[in-house]
Image (cartoon, rainbow, N blue to C red; front, side, top):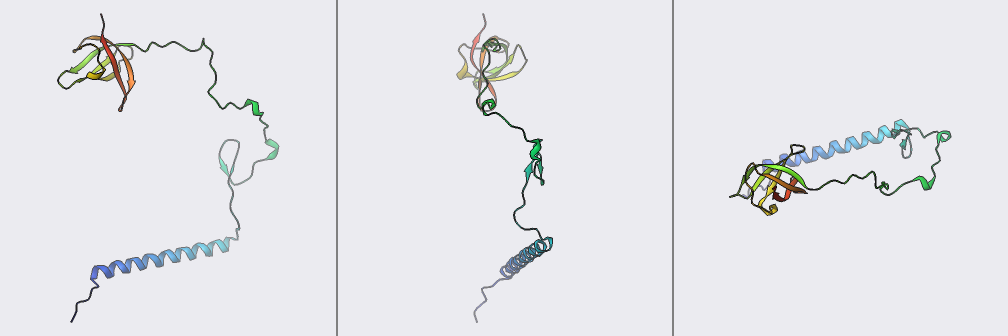
Length: 153
């Protein structure tokens, strides 16, 4: 006599799958019945009111505001030359930690006391801890990095 290929686990999985399919079918029928009872037909619309909120009532046409096409700005607004402050990219700070064997360290900015990472590849002079340095900032993978680091004289 040959042994059946159907195991207990397979039959249980099949029962669960069929039960789930039947529940899904019942839910679908319940939704269809509810839609017939509510007697709503077609697509429901959502409107945006003057404050940007979604509503189910259309906006009042008497409150409509006409906008002139020339007033719409699609670009970055032009600024006056007097409004732009010249920011010096070179910053000053103190080396708080530097490990020359590993090739990295940290510099504390003198202005805002922020700590910036620096790598040996961004150094122009050799530095050590507590040296006064000048540097520039560059966006790195984990934040701003100090580059072009030179000793202050």
